[in-house]
Image (cartoon, rainbow, N blue to C red; front, side, top):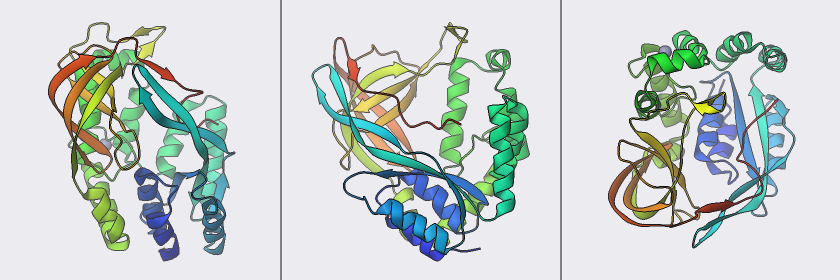
Length: 305
Ligand SMILES: [Zn+2]
């Protein structure tokens, strides 16, 4: 079922990040049966919420809208302070092609609320057409002792980076780099985007290389009962903040490396962005910002039921 008007909207609306555009295009082209997209609204695109909902209604898309919440972004970086500001509001939309999927979704939400996580995840996987092998693996990884036993810090994050690069059109984490069902799905999605949204495809797949200084922020970790499940680390996945704006925004990337950097270190780097990820080549360590701090009101976009 192709909804061309929705594909167009996904391509041009200002309130979508690329990842949201991708999900909406896949849904509108009929490649995905259900999806969840976030629309951001600020002073530059006030009418988009109305126009988006009008299109959904006109096309007979069944949707559930979240309540509005504010979001922050980095406004400026002054010496050791990363200063965030409230940039606008966001609304999440669950989209379905029919009422049957909506009913399935409601059951899913009920299960999540009742803490029936296994049941919910199986249902969610079905709803969003994730491969069975990947759902199974995802469920296994909810168990901290499984993670600890089967992965080192490095191999855990390395797999996340690898599958993201191998399957840039997928919304789920593939169970492994050579997952065949994920490969098939990735090709299907890629072809749908190429065919129905060529403008977005070109933009999304284009490699953008730029040089910037990066500020080393806190590393990722999995905390269980107040401590890391990998007390000894053989690498670190850092969060790094670009000091220079790129296309009007301060970007935050993740960088997995076996080299260790101090919190607040400033790295001279080359960033290659493609699809929804960035490859970072560190050319040198310049200096260190002492007492690096974030000045912000609340946390990043996350959904909760
Ligand atoms: Zn799989």
